[in-house]
Amino acid sequence: MVHYKVSAPGKIILHGEHSVVYGKDALVSAIGLRTNLEIKETDSEVIFIDFPSLKFQLEIPLIKVNEFLVNSDGTIENVKDFVENQFKRSNETENNTLVALFYVLKKAFGNEKVSKAFDLSVKTDLRIGGGSGSSAAFGVSIATGFLLLTGKMKENTLDHEMISNLAFESERVIHLNPSGVDNTICTYGGLLKFAKGKGFSKLTIPKQLNILIVDTGVSRSTAKLVSQVRDLHEGFPILFDNIFESMNILVQEAIKKYSEFNGDITDIEKLFEINSGLLTTIGVSHPSLEEIYKISRKNNFSSKLTGAGGGGYAIVILPSDYKNKENFENLISELNEAGFETTETVIGGG
Ligand code: PMV
Image (cartoon, rainbow, N blue to C red; front, side, top):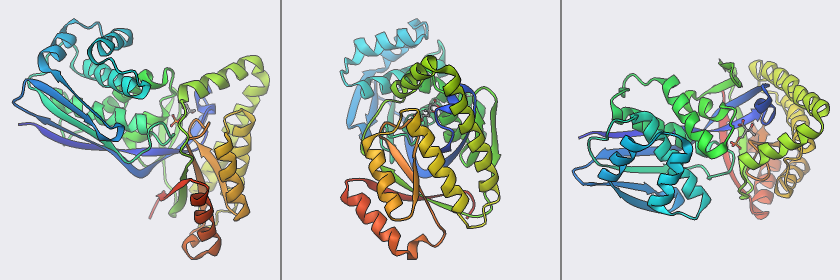
């Protein structure tokens, strides 16, 4: 019987969040925190779905899923109605997760029926709604799992483009109008330069670069923050076009600095500070993020938000020898005392 285990990494946007929505370049990296999916065919009549990270489980008869696959017109609206009638979840995250799941299932299977029931479990190390790619890593995992289940793709010949495109559909359910940066990085991994509609290129950093991820613990909606920025852009188009263009120039400078990185983070720290200021200017900071910036600066570190902002995660750039530094110990203890969880990760070589 078919049994697959797949996983996808989370991501951080190093530079270029928000401006990427307006066609500018972004610099993004995969991180060590992952989402793991397991899918196992069973002899049951019931499909069992387990989301331990969201703390919910549910069952649905195979026959109902096959009726849905045969009868649905495959539009998001239609899948929403199906999920609403079938599961009646009032929690928005749970509901969106289920809509994305069945939407991707429908896209993968078309009008074909699922031949056997299965147990599906999706677990993640990422905080949901934090800005570290939890929804994209979810999309990539379910896209891969369902494409394997259909037999359209084999485990030893994964079709990354197909996976990323299908994961983008999942992102469309959750984020309405995503740039595609998250599903791309969570599919391909590594470090990428990405531009909406223009694709991506892989980049390498000569030396390992250390980053601290700081969780504000504040959940926020990417869709709402993107629409808040859109409103400001509509009100002040020339001003905002110029800010987005500045962010784009910053990304080009960053690519140079990261590509030549020799262990000295001084210039990258300056770019972190400037990028952070530009993001505050477009209104996507948050008191919790400001607190992290303050604690970082006090200990001689530079930080910025990553992702949509409004809470979520911040990142702090760390020097190669950070472990031996007293100010790093102070940074961690002050961040933790203020209620922020921290995770060390690396990007680039090493
Ligand atoms: O916070 P996240 O991981 O959802 O990232 C959002 C990035 C934005 O540039 C703000 C939106 C997008 O679609 O690229």
